[in-house]
Length: 211
Image 1 (cartoon, rainbow, N blue to C red):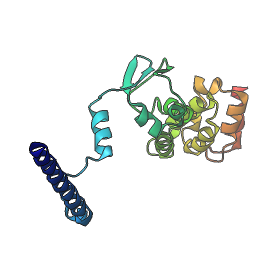
Image 2 (image 1 turned 180 degrees about the horizontal axis):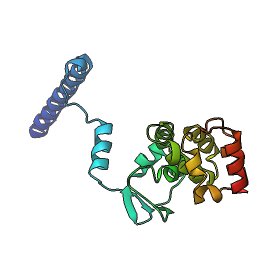
Image 3 (image 1 turned 45 degrees about the vertical axis):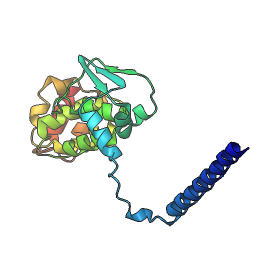
């Protein structure tokens, strides 16, 4: 029928045109120089993480230390701490005593916690400060030694701080801190080559007082 033939011819012409268009488009894609295409820069993942942490967005771990409570991001904690890399708990209670400031009075506690939680950067900071005689010398160093001696795993700190005790030896042995030292701790102090005394008789006399 004439009408049907005309419609069939139109369809064939459309199919041919469509096929030709697809072929040209495909050739255009193959010949296109993608290196010339200008696209927007991708946002840096580090920037995303930084913004989330500094703005406290969507924290996923709650850390409680004494009266202090922190809403944290697990990825940040795991970056610094071996303890948190192995923990999947949504809440962690660290202890009853806590402080947000590092000082002479709590540095031994902070160092012990840093080693327990496996936070090497914080542990190295404490060790560096303790090695500075301008910060920890004489009676202050003696107090650090006593505090370190009362904790397991801080024997290296106890021994490293002993040379910082020199001229205040005679003052130390007159205090209750010295009297309450264990026999081993008192022996270590009395046998130190760094204490400033006039002679061995002074050391022997102080040993007798401790006994």
